[in-house]
Image (tube, rainbow, N blue to C red; front, side, top):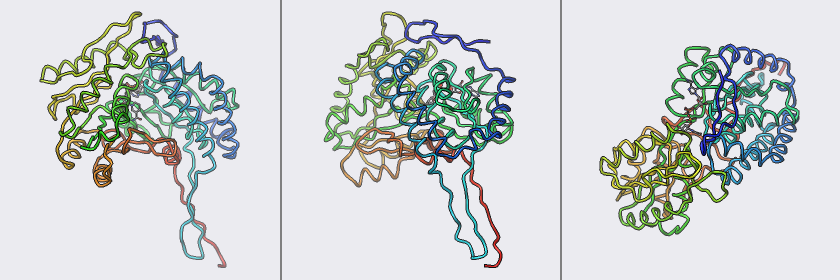
Length: 468
Ligand code: NAD
């Protein structure tokens, strides 16, 4: 069985890749275990692993344009986003984790004098990651960096539609001197390749990024197989909370909300897909948001001027349009976008859509749309805003716009989300852990030294001393 990789912008056949079968997954896992046991990668000093990963980062820099084009073509992401965001961010990720390789520390316990007790973090052996399609290279690098720096053998399954940048990354890793078999990229479908990885008996840990529904099946497969460690990074319904003084941020407020909602056509786990605005400035903020959203350039992702490309496929377009139409039929009003537009060349394009007059419990407020759609709600008190922010099953990110430290900290402390930003809509840089709460995920953060918790396990060593 093969997978046709199609360009979402025009239906062009970009490549055909094999679907890795369950038998092949089992063989790869066993081979990866042999590579781990041989010590050819796991047995290197961390600084020597770092040197290989730093060479990989240099090669990514050399091939930056190739990597940007692969992601733009496979995922329909605007080329400018890939060039200026995803690819440089991915290179930085690999460098950051290379440099962190020898900074994964244990601790010495405060025991009595006749004992030395300490902890150390060790790699699992064979680990796997299952990736989403919306940030193919970036998500691969969030896994590759810490998993390989820690000494594991890693198996990556790219999303069905977007394997090419991950496959190119693996070829660059080989060129950088990564021992054969320490990194394997197995393209395929979720039902065949993903499911086989999740239930494989050899793989010791699996890191999943994708939808909450699929995350549940990965967790269940682990429970039904070898209880491999599971880390889940899943969907979101992340809010902005714009307080009465929010307009003091000026254009930064409007630009921040628009970028958060519509980057990658809103097909973003941390998309700011809810905007809670204090009633006193609601109408002015909505008017400015509508103007800014309507000005976004919709078009061919290969054109550097494009800000909103196509959505990933027909099924996604139909699902997003049905969500908009459903909300409109229940009384919502689109102040920008709201209906499909045609772009020469093909593809399914939905312009930046902002919906107002939406009931707080409407499905479009409580469920992830994963498209260029954000909903506006109105609040009058701080407690009400926090309660509204928390009234969904997700808890990935949130942002508060106020210069009042008491309001900002009340929200930062009160919002149930893994990442809260103040006066910005930010996931933070590489030094900051990234991970969700509630049904957005658990099991270990991405980025920062915390990421090593996903890819290493702690061992306590107790040494009884004599003659002390
Ligand atoms: P998806 O859940 O459809 O697919 C994700 C991956 O899981 C793919 O590689 C797919 O092949 C695989 N998969 C599907 N069925 C499987 C199964 N039964 N067993 C094992 N693997 C299986 O998600 P998607 O459409 O690729 O990505 C969009 C979702 O990802 C959104 O919900 C988005 O919010 C989320 N996401 C989260 C983060 C984060 O860091 N929290 C980042 C990016 C995307």
